[in-house]
Image (cartoon, rainbow over all chains, first blue to last red; front, side):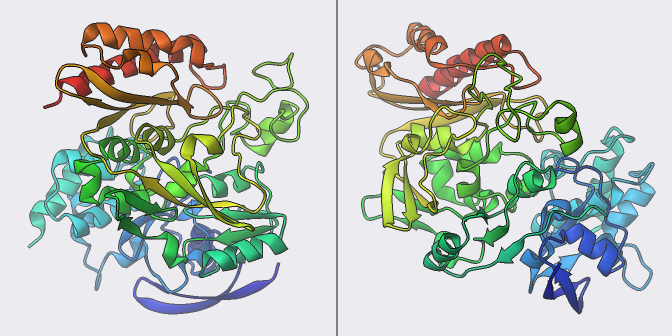
Length: 156
Length: 326
């Protein structure tokens, strides 16, 4: 299929790739950019495992076309840590045991990161609302909520 | 890696450009947030040769107060943007409550007003993978000969599952439609018909460009919805009510439902209640009007009888909430 040039920023670095019109953002990130942290858990935007940030807001990358993110800032779980130091959200998941099998974790971390940027001191209800589209089959969510609360408390 | 079928992607900057691209490409579909269309393309139930992305069109991304006190909402406004507007909480509560209950917050970041109004109808036998549907000889709505919900007929009973339409209908809203012959407006209910395989009465090449709500005045409104998984699911049934009272008697009321038929339903006969004292008795009179006007079928995981009960309970409790509101 014919490809056209897609220019966007991924985790702070500008990229330019030849990408077909029908390529999903998740496939672009995993197959073209080589960032396999973003997961595919379902085929219909039902599980949230593929959540990334586009211009700082959560986006389900498995139901977004890559080309519709032209010119945007895309962030994936690989972009969270700086200089080998975990982000506050990642640290929260690590210390509060918010991750078990880990498959949903990248999506959870990105949805939680998007929330804390908009709302640095969310209530438990606001955390639950922001993560309501992200399914976890291991934790029962309690530890995930605690992880996000810990991240919010740890923020300066 | 599971690529979508091939298509061209076009990204116009104006409505006129979008309409002219659509005219040139009869196989094209309009795309906004993609939470419905991309999933359907992925499952093989939508097969556009061209996808026209409307999200870059600034003129349909605005919300503007009208001279008559009403509100005009562009079709490509996202539900997240809509929910940030104070007018909704103050004046159009039914629309705020409906928008807040569409899917999950991550969907609402991209899902649009126009997309929710044009949401494809849904059915247990339709919203499945290609493999699943092919094993079941497909269905009447797509590629098949038989409706598995009502095998003896030739009518598709897939359910309309949008949340915004009943709220906008209860609020007396109209759709602004852009097409090859220019712009027209119609009461929102008139763009639908009760046919699961063709529920939108938009002419070829037309698109919804905006929604207009009349000035809220003293109307009170709300929306209530039942779904399997509260965090994310489409409605099994949803009820929107807008009403005005003088503190004792009912001055006006509009009731609209979703999830029960292949289109949103504006309940007829409510004018019989006008002038009567509001209260529990009126709630029962209202609920009694519903059964003959709805037709839930076995198109979801829950049986039709359950959805009949749920829609009655939603209408009763929402009506009570609105008349008890300060």
